[in-house]
Length: 172
Image: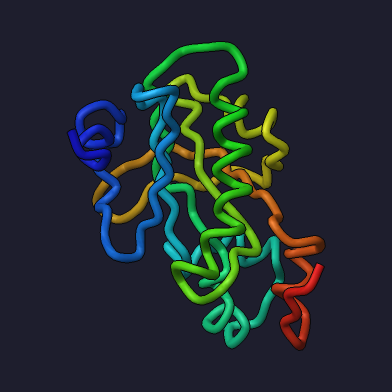
């Protein structure tokens, strides 16, 4: 069974359109797959909540949004106390290592959305050290969508400030 098929079959949102820009992390215990996570750089080219949070200019945003990686899907296949936050922490740390090798640039900010209307509160994100940074407005074209909680994790010291700075620096 391919991991993208697992997401399509078992995640409530279905497929996250895995493509060449998708980085997939698979957590296993022995041979058992316990979780699958997907990450994409610059997935949200224009996102007002993040853009206001960072406070960057249009030019900075166009050049730097690629340093923001979205956790597109997080599929837990096993229910076990603290396992989701543990796997999320490991995946986020691994993302910082994998991004330069796979994409040729680092990940400075990880971001994701949690849907409270589906009874998700972001508990594992909070436990893994992510910050709830606001709520989306919902909506989006013809599809009506519920507002989502927006979570971020700075993977570089002062990532938000660095993304806004006149000169982008990556050193911690």
